[in-house]
Amino acid sequence: MDTSTTTDTDFEQDVREGLTAFPKFLYSKYIYDAKGDALFQQIMDLPEYYLTNCELEIFQTQTAEITAHFKGNGQGFDLIELGAGDGKKTKILLKHMQEMGYDFVYKPVDISSNAIADLSASLQGELPLVETDPEVGEYFEVLDRLKAFDKRKKVIMMLGSNIGNLLHKRAIAFLSRMQESMNPEDQLFMGFDQTKDPQVVLDAYNDPTGVTAAFNLNLLHRINRELGGNFAVDKFKHWEVYDPETGTAKSYLLATEAMEVHIGALDLKIRFDQWETIHTEISQKYTDTVVDWIAGEAGLERIATFKDSRNYYKNYLFKK
Ligand code: AVJ
Image 1 (spheres, rainbow, N blue to C red):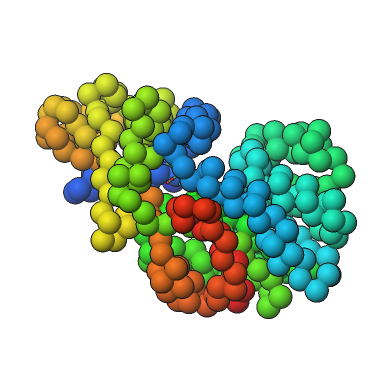
Image 2: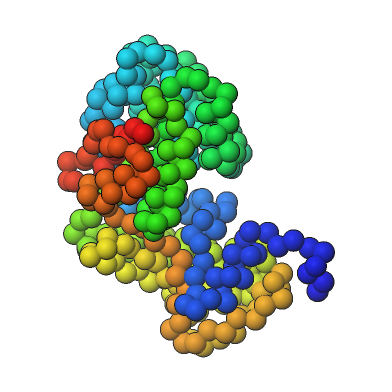
């Protein structure tokens, strides 16, 4: 193949880099195609996956306190949600703010136009009085544009402990970019899953029904589908570890036997030894100390903390 005339997509480049590295790795963001999105929806309904219900509990029990911070001195504001998903948790806040007569616009941001279309339709049905202005695009592209053209106060929201997919160094870089896109009166509201009994964490990423395994294995299916791979997916096993010292949960795919895999679009043959690993995801767990450290490195200051009744999960509000 003449590669000089074709440009590899990010997915192609990252798969090539990750599978030719030692040890092998793949980025978890590539799990989320249409099938991966659907599997993640199923994960959020698992009894073991406590994160969603904890954040829901916080929103249900502390609605007024949280939204009072957003409102501040009563000027209008834009509530910008990065990666809004189905908006189930956010709707609790929106409903309350609308009933209280807050002057705000809800701006869900997602790179998936499908996700945005579904969310807009459900908001139109459930909360027709909430002014909604969805944005399809990359987080920082949208945030920088808003900083330049929209002088209203912004409350930026990122839920679900999505930041936990980034190791501290990359989390700091991400928060720094966030900080740069904020004006002095703006706020950042984020969910951070907390350290807890290691068994509880392991169970959340190791459900007996195998939904999490299917979610992780979707990476290999996606390479097969989109890049002409021939992974024998049933010969890989989902494996989860949690290190309570660092608070890092790590997901792997293990080759249960030695094999060779061909990826057509990359013109690449990959060898696996028996029990060789592909590292696919980290799900970082936090303490206030670690959050204050990474936020501080990014020029952000924690101004409020909201937690669930079991101390499993926290939402923090930051200013720059
Ligand atoms: C969406 C990144 C927060 O790490 O907990 C769930 C993804 N992976 N089960 C997480 C996930 C396996 C999830 N985040």
